[in-house]
Amino acid sequence: MNQILSQAFNQVSQLSSDKQAIVANYLLEHLEDILDEAEWERSLNASQAVLQRLADEARRDIAAGNEKPLDEILKNS
Figure 1 (cartoon, helix red, strand yellow):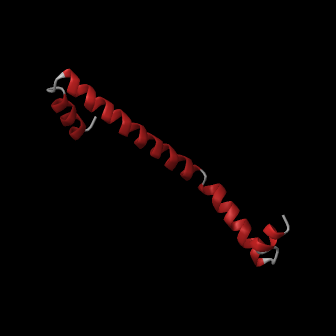
Figure 2: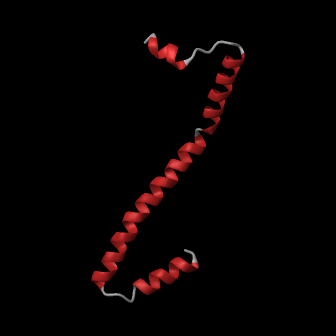
Figure 3: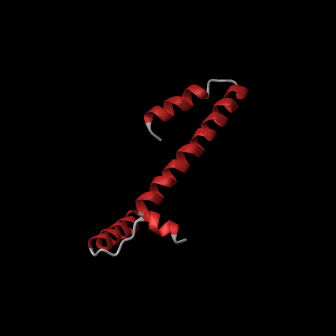
């Protein structure tokens, strides 16, 4: 635990049980958001190689003249 978090917990420990519960609930709500964001970042970072491969493939197709305009593709769907 880093120093600032330790300081925060020390201050919260001086509050009444009711106030500690309020702080704990607030922290847990925000912690869930932070953990979700961290998981999204991990997932995005893990997919970078796949995204790069797909972008490279698209560039090769464009350079080879194998691409079609999106309007044409959608029109024929």
